[in-house]
Image 1: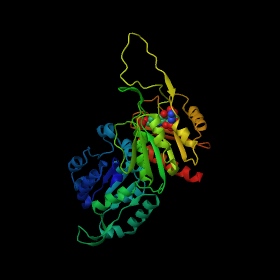
Image 2: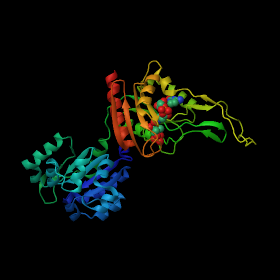
Image 3: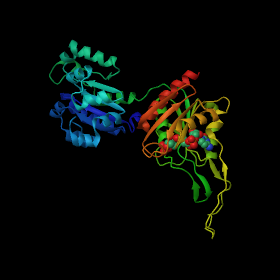
Image 4: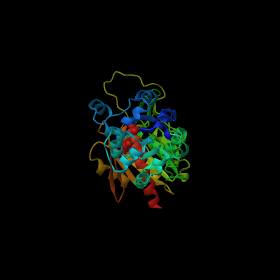
Length: 401
Ligand code: PMT
């Protein structure tokens, strides 16, 4: 279940006897590494208490749309944006009918209307209610709108009937949820991603560096793995764990990053340079700690570092090559200049003058620039943006072949 690690799951619970299984479902999702926020409909609280779900999810349970206090904490729009997946289990016949007709008459249905995340339902109801033509029409309508249905299963029901309508077991629901994060659109492709800062040593204890945390590059590596790619993550020193299933190559300096990037480059289909590489390094590294002298001003002599992404873009055969542009003004013009000068296929521009996005923040907002198009991706978590970026990169890569 590695695909659920760090994923934001909004777990919706509607009213039905199967709601007791949502406790185990929450526990399993958490155990698989997901962050879970639970939304309960009023009737769900008749079957299981919010306190149970709060204890198991580790987060307050959301219940009311028009609750000023809850909205001030994480309101319905924030919940909708936060979600990587909205999973409703159990989904009652009534909930399916309300979703099918596009209603937003409680918190759960409103979040469904407001989210861009995939929505999945685990239906649970009496077999006759499931077979009812109204429910079947609602199910078809929901599926035609891209909403996924997990189950229902067939078997003995709480009311004593036997037939279709049983909610799938929590283990099966977790497996289906994890599968939603495997897009497979880069299956068989090898991607190199540079991430984090470089450190350019002055002496054994000092270096020149920058504020890159690696979050953007690591999120791209995770999204690329989920898209089925084999990923080599070439990373400067950072304090975050590498996503599972990537080959992590740790480097310090720009020169080390260059050698790791160009070694066996002929294997590489797509190269993404998200690292913040120091443009210059000291001309010499002092063998011993540089001592403080009597002079007030100290001069450092720097020499230009090799341009890693431009070297990759100039290689033959050349992988589909994507750079980032970190700018503090005139962002798009400077980015277009780098696209041309470095011979890139795409460049992703971000404004690093802002503190809420760019360096070291959890969110970013970017503009993807190719020779033909410009596409703005609004502010979102780096993980959500990375998923969009990998989809776009996969599509452009395929179009280039
Ligand atoms: O790591 P985070 O805290 O999550 O922050 C993310 C980020 C802001 C670092 C990331 O989104 C980003 O913008 N990365 C590129 C930073 C940068 O060095 O940009 P640049 O405009 O200076 O360089 C342009 C491109 O050339 C980049 O792809 C860079 O990796 C590459 N480059 C630059 C210099 C060099 N010597 N070799 C390179 O390959």
